[in-house]
Image (tube, rainbow, N blue to C red):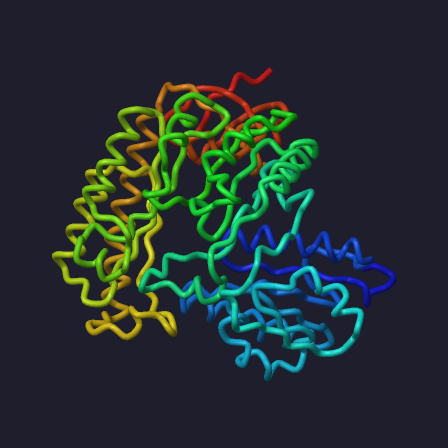
Length: 432
C-alpha cells in the first residue's frame, strides 16, 4: 500500500469500449496530477464508470456501488458515465459519493478532488456538448489499444437511451487522432481498434471515416494493424470497401448490427434500412472480400415481436452466415418510444428467444471456425493461460476475429504469430 494512502485511486469500468477508453484517459489525468493508481480497492478514491444501455447494466452499477460503500466505508466514490448522466438523483443518497458526474468533464476530476468537497455536476442538456478531448498514451492491455474518434449518436432508434446519455454525434479532430495513433504505435501497441458511440458517423469538416482510415494506415511506425468498431450498414462506403480489399493492415472484420430480421420490427425500431439493402451489402462484401468476417447484434423480444417475426430473424441470420452473434433481450429504457409501445413481452419469453438464437450463433461460430482448418492466420497473443503437455499456452485474436490458442516452448506474449488453424480453436505454430 502506498505510504500516502490518501493519494490512491482505483477505477472500475462497466459497459462499452468507449467507457474503457475514457477510464484510461481518467487514469492518465489522475496520475499527471500526482494521484497514485492501484489496480483494485482498497484505495482512497474509487472511480466507477457506469453504463445504462440496459436495465441489467443499471442494476450492476447500483449493486457495485452499494457493495463498495459497504466494503470500503471510508473510501470516497467518484461516479460518472451513462447511468449517472441518466439518473443522478439515484446516487445522491450514497454518502460516500464524493463526485457525481455524467458523460463530460472527466478531465476536471483531479482538480475537483483536490477541492475536497462533495460535488454533483451532471449537465442534463447533453445535446449541446462539444467533443471533449481526452487523449491517452497507453492502455490497460499491453498489446491492443482502443482509440476513441467520436462520441454521441443522432440515430434515435426507438429502443436506445444512448443519444440521451451521450448527446448528439460529434467527431474528434483528425489531427489529434493521428497523433494519438502514432503515440500508441511508438509505445508498442500491435493493434489499434477505433471506437466511438457511432463510429461510422465520423466527420471532421468533411474528413469521413474511410478518409481517416486511409490516413491512419499511413501513420508511422506502421507496426500496428487497424480494426474498426461497429458500423451501421449505410456507413460502409466505396472507399472503405476498397481499403479492406487492398490493405491487409486493416483487418478483414466488420461488425454490422442487424437487430432484427423482421421488416415490421425494424420499422418499429426506427432502423434506417430494409433487409434487402442489408442483404445486398452482405452479398457484395462476401463476393469482393472472401476472407471478410462479419459479426452482428440482434435484439429479441422487442414489443409486439411474435413468433413469426422471431423466425424471420432466425432465417435471415442463418442465410447471412455471420461468424459471431451478440444476442440481447429487449430492455425497456426510460424516455424511449419503445418503452411506451403496446405488446411488451415477458422476460421469460425474451430469455427463451435469446437461448434459441444464441444456440444458432454457437453453431455458426463453430462452422466458421471449422471452415478455416488448414488456412494460414495471424494471431496477436494477449494472454498466457495454464500450460498444456509441457508447453506454454497463449490466447489471442486473429485478423478475422477468431479466438485462438497457441502452444509453444517460447514466450510469445505480445507477438503476432502466423500458423495454420486446426479448425477447433488452435493455431499450429512451429515452436523452436
